[in-house]
Length: 277
Image (cartoon, rainbow, N blue to C red; front, side, top):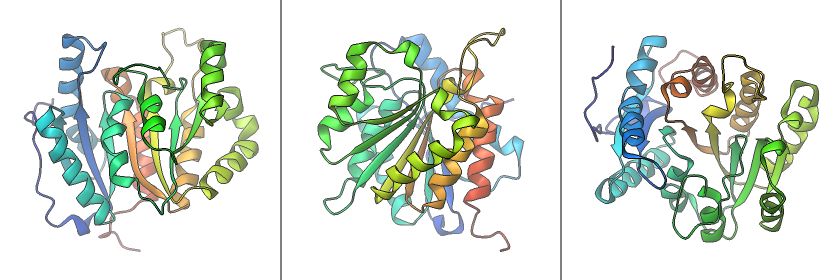
């Protein structure tokens, strides 16, 4: 069905102004990702654009796929910078949240307040000497003093006291999974509005696994996609979202119905410039 991409296939960004969104995919191998897991993720992420093209009329710019070796990181950053400069919203599929660490330096400016809205069940604050899976915001907050972090959908049952204390010490804001349910939608909206009011630029990061039940029984708690759509809609309406990153490495998360719903929400909120008004 797939297989149209080659590794590190990139596309010319000539004519970017015809689009309002660009779909990009990246894969990087950091600890403790095994080689076989990385190869699976790399192949699946290469297929995302073709999968999306089969779902709807393809009005997305194809930004290509990057396997982030040291040489490819620079090319990836260069093209993301150009998309940002042309007011094209990059929607990036990544196998790990740590992909944000390559983009935040492009947005960090002395006169701009930068915020990250993380939608997922974990804080991603693992304290390590070098970036590992689950450590993205530990490094982001250490490198960028003015960065604000708002985590939405944190599963309190999966957090220990040390993690909660560390998140509080770092000045993170968060809402728990129950606080992101429909019954709390007005409070959630108010908290998100307050966070957005303190930011000039925002990056949305969505953990796709947090939107899917972990087993066929489906008894686990997980974020409801219609609530995630509300977060996306409110964030985009603020006019401050500079990039969206969708994180997943398994097919069941990358190609899930919930992922398709998110992409449809983005497509509806950020129409391409050639659509009739």
